[in-house]
Image (tube, rainbow, N blue to C red; front, top):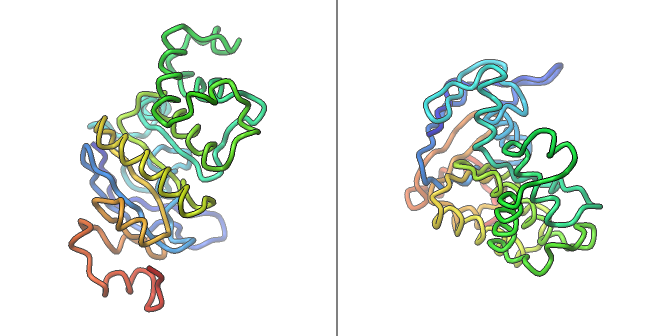
Length: 246
């Protein structure tokens, strides 16, 4: 489904954020992307959907290289993105925010006027139901808790009808109980709809609890790629250091 080969990304006056990363992602994978802050997790996700253009390397999605504007637009249509800071419009309702996930499908004129078809509205309401917020559909997101806002972000991504879901530190700002609720939703989506999911995360215990495959980055380099039950303590120590927290 997703092939990444020799991917590198540098920023002006800074060391390599990603250095020669290669990764194959299969349909149905639930990958936890681990690493310390600054290891390159966010940069990798943003290079996959070209929110940041790689300095060098190759990204292929569904057998097609992502390279020019046309291929980027086509790929993004089937890639959902969940952000750490939610990226919601606070003054809009839950439904209005989730409908933003339908913009790539909507008639351009109607979408500019914030008018959506009945089908789009039905899809958005169904996605809201899937994350357990049907009673908040017409509530402005400014009145929601952090966990509820993240669920809106997930519903918006689902409204795209993606085959690949990228989640950038989706539970970093949430308490432990809410973090598990959000990860349970992502896991259920992956299991029920076979939506391939890549979640960046710095919490080792949550990664081992929910991920079926663990990919580790350190200083911009891929240093770990194994099934959860194959990982050794020495590999975790190499990734996090000897004083890593469970």
